[in-house]
Amino acid sequence: MEPPRQTTRAVNYARVSRLQYFNDAGDKLGSASDSIWYDTTSPTVDLADPANGSLIEQATLNSRGYIDVTFSDGGGIGLDVASIVDSGQEFTLSGTAASGVTVNRAPTLVPGTTSTYRYTFSGSFGTGSVSVSFAGGSFADNAGNANTAATETFSIPSLSLVVNPTVFPENAGSNAATATVTRQGPTTADLIVNLNSSDTNEPTVQPTVTIPAGQISATFAVGAVDDSEYSGTRGITITASAPNYAPGIANIQVTDDELPSLTASVNPTTFAENGGSNAATGTITRQGPTTSALDVNLTSSDTTQAAVMVPPTVKIRKRETRA
Image 1 (cartoon, rainbow, N blue to C red):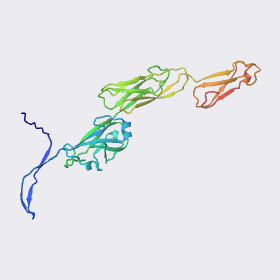
Image 2: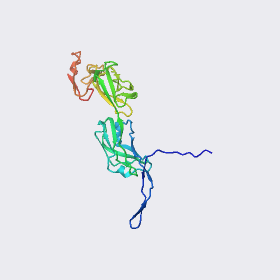
Image 3: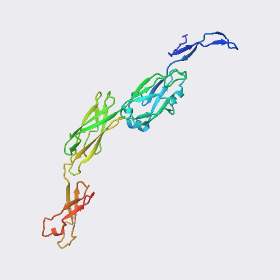
Image 4: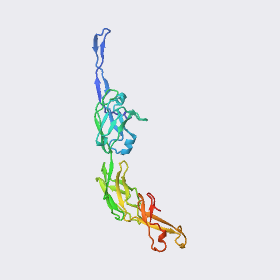
């Protein structure tokens, strides 16, 4: 028959001799050596959300307004909850991304958990790396063992986008400008960046660009689309985005290579010379900016017949295209 197996667990214990004997008058009669053993393993703490070493989107973190932390009792004798929920400071934040943030020192237990606590904050995180430094002795277990100091981190990454030149004509071709997208954050893996133009009928950008592992940036071409209509100078926004990254935005302008134009129409196009002062109706239409009124000069090629019936000018009013 196989002998019973024994398993052991390595823990830290302390030994105390406590037994002494006294009579009713308080005289010591003697003592005996006895040992009471208790766990001296320090409790620990870890970032829960965002987790240690993780990435979190700036907008997500700031909109929810909290950081979750999990406390653990290594010896299994329970945490001193009062030492956690009091007004003491369990941790501090450092890094430029956290410079505008103040953490509420009195956390609350996260529903559905036994030892994860939620710390709300005021202010807003920027982008970059955030260090969370847990102070030694800031909380304890039920045996009075205090935690040791520890530091964990999380990152709020971002993208930046630069386009050169920022102003170009619509007939500049498929390489009208060069754009560079740069990441602030980890570079250990490829990063696929999504690209978008606010006006898909004008400048063109490829759907994605990849920043290779070990690199912080990548370039791509911005193309111009020529058309036959006058639309003036257009302001356009190009956006670079990736999951958990604050987006990069660049504003550009595309100028028109067509000049503003006028068209004239007359209805009916044929009428008798005795048709009177309202023999036909003429319409002048402008293709171009409508931010101000436009005075249009009118002339006739036959000064002996129709010119007398055409006014010298007509005004197209502000924000209108025809008169």
